[in-house]
Length: 352
Image 1 (cartoon, rainbow, N blue to C red):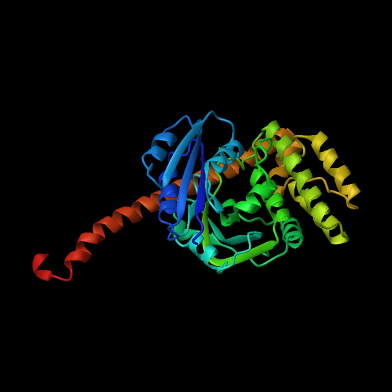
Image 2: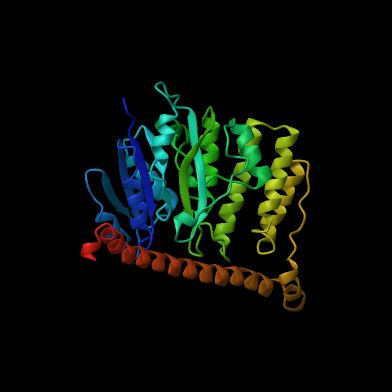
């Protein structure tokens, strides 16, 4: 029998992107699928956009605003799939992403096999996505996968995974306490329940680069830093539960070091806890320093001003890049529309 795949999409204030995302889900060449959208109390037209796609295949639900993790849990509770495809409301699936992953399982699939694939970042034009392989782009056992993630500061984007229902149920629900990196923590639990990761080449996902209002943007939020620290502690604990060797402990220290910049100097209490955990792992964390671009601001005006400038400049830069990429997308669309009538008539000069 052909397994049913449930494509689950949590959506919050995603009216700008949701049409493209839903089109990529509907266009999947794997025909045995259902698509479930859960609107998380959006304040824009996200719900209306989602309902314009409603059909026998696409189901839309709404809830009071509770966060992405709660929306994902709600979506899973309503789905019937043998396999689960998580998809954020601004990302895209390659047309044969799911088909390639299902077909690689063969006639006797092992439900404990966790499937991953390729992914690339883009702004507005997925055709310009940056596809950059990492050490996670291969078949790996769970502990090895997590050690490489921590050692290399790498990750797999949420939609790259295709997860059996058995694995999904074994992992348990998404943690609603986590306001960011909830996917990183969640897939640690999926990994722990799995028999290993099988990487499927060409099964591609397009990840829209984070915006300042996205979950991954930390900003000045104290709650997000509390949630990040919780996720960091859980990550280290999960790895040690699978393998507490010297390499695993060193990987844990490196992971803590990479994320310490998100905690210090805004939250010295959390930074101190991270240092204590590093000592427990047999290591030591270095205090993050401002780069030369911001060090002089810190020297004359203090770290708060330096941090504000450090946050603001990338936001301005990305805003300019996004607007430029959007403009190029519009020009490309107009050019394609103008070229189409000419190409259609070129084969019959008498009509031109």
